[in-house]
Image 1 (cartoon, rainbow, N blue to C red):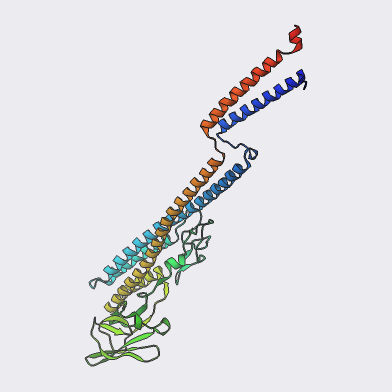
Image 2 (cartoon, helix red, strand yellow):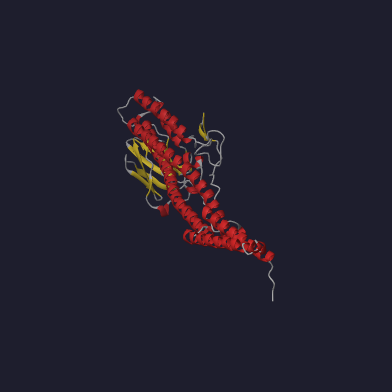
Length: 399
């Protein structure tokens, strides 16, 4: 037979009461915090899952901050390129107007002055800040405006390339200013035409048969005019001295075709006038294009043919520069669209991580309230048991 002393009964009752009180307190804490796992020891596996989920959310937050920085930069870039495109269009309209044969030298001078102001605005756009002490077109970084106006033209003093955000998503913070503003393809994108004539002008030309166009290294043609009496002919000589065309009769405005290319000379070339056809290079500056037009319109000694050549070459170069700017603007727009997609993926990742964390450590409120009520009942029963046990003392019985 096991003997249970009064002291043992009291100790057991007190232990039971303390356990019930602790369980009731823990149930109350879980209700207050709305968490099932208050400490790793409560459920080590669930605590580990919740910690991994929180780390995932922190990475998602960091990615979103980087994405937001890129979005802000690309929005500024797209806006700047939109402004630049509008300025180029204004310059184009003025250049077209300057080609009017009825314009006087003074009127062309006025147009040149207006183009000079547009050039200043364009340079300001190219040096636009990003609102954080940097520059939109700074490339890989610049502590000063990346474009400097020098006597020989506008130069890029930034570091070429792009800065990417510090995240898993490859998104840019800046664009390469040199590539955007100073590296449009010259001419028509395949070849460049130029003139030394004061009596005739040449258009931008076009490709008629790509399979016959020579490589850049071999593309160096000279169109030379020969005038004898009332007869005007021309030769087209290749780089190696051979003739692509020889002794062909000239007719103003009629295409001159050779080796898969065609160009049109207009006007009245004199004996010895030459026109060059050279390969296009990705080195056309939007500012140089304006500078050439401005210089040509400011010169009162230029003949009508030379003014026409200035206008035609200028329009060609402005169109090429506008195309380069518009292409970069389209790229900025595509990046903004991609940013929207990245933002959606990051939000989905955060939702998944939050769901995982919640499943691991959050409380089922219905079950928790029921559990709390059960603990209250258990604690009340323990209190009643303890109170009854106290009345069973021998001393109480003697009294």
